[in-house]
Length: 389
Length: 246
Image (cartoon, rainbow over all chains, first blue to last red; front, top):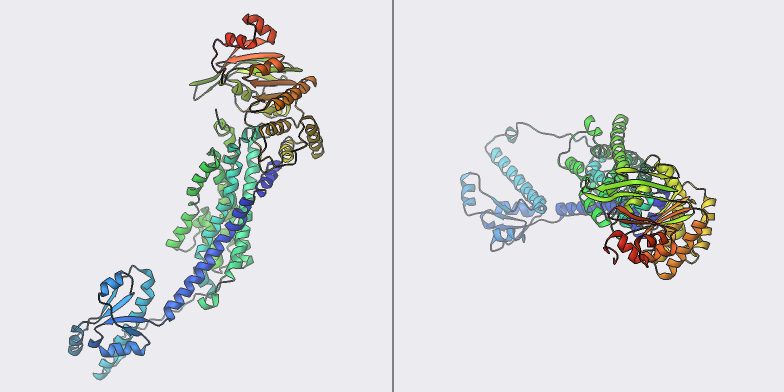
């Protein structure tokens, strides 16, 4: 078994392409994409918040006081386009403010004066601009209503029966955890990618090379041959996992965390915990991919299955992204889901719950062992051994 | 020493009969040839002997042991060069052979000593430390033979050993098989090439459509068929020339 293990490692380390893809590009890709994405998003958000707001206004002459207020707030009022609806639809303008002739009339008579914001709410990038314009309009509306009440001798506080205050208990670490919500997904993908090539090479590759039949003639129980292959695949997965985590720790160091008012709780200690947590998942991935690849006759066929399996670790990650809930004990017993929720807890800076960690490692380890046992029996099937006849 | 009695093997739940009824014996210190057209059941017979397939019925003994009962023990006494001779392209010839030595549980010193012997006997000095990627058929067969015989097996099975080899390599291979025979080993090879059995084999087993059509030395087969050439005898004995030209 040791012989098989060492040979598979040697064999695959000889392949420069594999090493480059699996041990360098694979673990680096996640952290780099992640770091670039996050810094870009942060920069975009601050730019949109702080850049001077340009606002085309139709019928500015109907509400000089409103326009004056906007200008005092630093809004640059521009001339409206010919066809405002088309301009928004073609994404030339994000928001256009329209004040009709009836504005002045309603204003004079003390009725709510109609103000129209033309925008496409399905365009996500315009969200910030729209809320900025709304904010200015609300501020002005508040000012005017206060003035009107004061003129009539009414204390403006009467219109504010309650005063809502939110006490934010979030810490910079926990806000950082929101940013790191993608992390479990990237980590699990790294594990699956890391074991993929090796799983294919040691099974489908062996059949394609026609070296499986001679290999099985050696006086070794077949489960031992499979165990050696699985051990090699798992080692590869663990290597990519370790490299990926270290790469994440380094990459997060480049993020402009101070600008974002967050702290990223991802140091080597957290990475070590994440490694322990994901180690059984490496065996799980290795066994699952090996089983699938063993049924394929060629490298190519195996790769086409892998594309689908790579979706498996995504399911719990996306579920958590879409429907974030509190970690509960049952979650820590579901393989792949447990890694997701517990890594998220880790990066939020919460104390390590050893019982949950134990449950996660135990259940994932068990599932992995079951799959590994199934893999061990695969080479007892003649139709998985012979390439022809 | 191999004894096979009434071996039968079917595939697809009995729909395809690969080996119908094959009985033969192969003695130590002899080269036994399984001769037959393509698809006659030679490879399936050998696969049953080297335990990768279980026969539906019939019995086999290799040196008195039943391969189905003690597959691991049989595998230690057998040296097999199967039809598929896949090597690991990224490993050198030496590493390929060494891997099999390790799987047999041999000590490193023993493995290196055996490899040195093979380099001599099979003339592999030129390419033993090169990666096997890009090896010629002849070089591949030599590596496949060396790794199969690393543990000095008593019984040697070869499936179509001269497939794809040029004349010179074939001659070298035959010479090597004669050496194995001289060492008192039991050598069994399958082939569909008449000249091969005529030149090499002490005992010929003609297999056609999963059955043994005839068995004996070249002379005995000629006498039984009443023909002058082995080729004519072969056609007569299997009852058709099907598969001969393949």
